[in-house]
Image 1: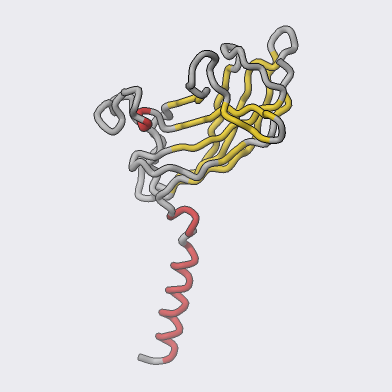
Image 2 (image 1 turned 90 degrees about the vertical axis):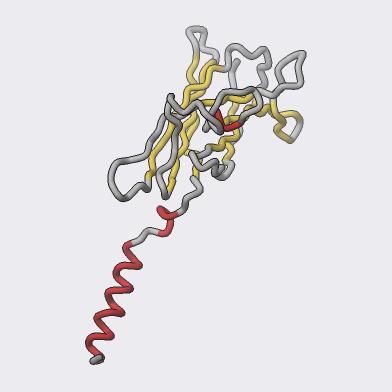
Amino acid sequence: MKPFTYLFFLQAIIFFSSCNDPELLQVVPEIKYKSVEKIPNSLGRDSLIRLTFSYLDGDGDLGISASDTMPPFNYSPYNKFYNNIFIDYYEQKGNTFVPVTIPFTRDTVRFLYRMDVLTPDGKNKAIRGDISILLDLTPYDVKPQMIKFGIQIADRQLHLSNWVETPAILMNF
């Protein structure tokens, strides 16, 4: 082959490899904290939290259909993957944050959600976007001054995302 042909193939390889965003090719979902908004009740006390985080999934297999009721998505108190969004609730004790426990039990407060399927049509399945969840804190008798949340999601292949935490949130219960 002529040197010009080699140069053309080398440029084509560089061009096509640079078009692939390696971040979008990860099959394990990735999340990032975006924001927390406190929403007061009619008395001016914080009662709801809007938690927003972004997601990125290279193969687009986020979400569970309502018809997905067979293992591993079946309902069972012991089946983590019936849900696919996991949010832990922490309170500040001294200089550290600890999981909030439900009074008279050993259970910790954990918000569990089942997000619908987000897989796009077409050949490229990579997806990214934001998820906002409204958390109602009023049913819990525990009213700490400083709280924070830990968040993780799972995809349909049961890959768990990274774990992210919110910054400390000063509450007015």
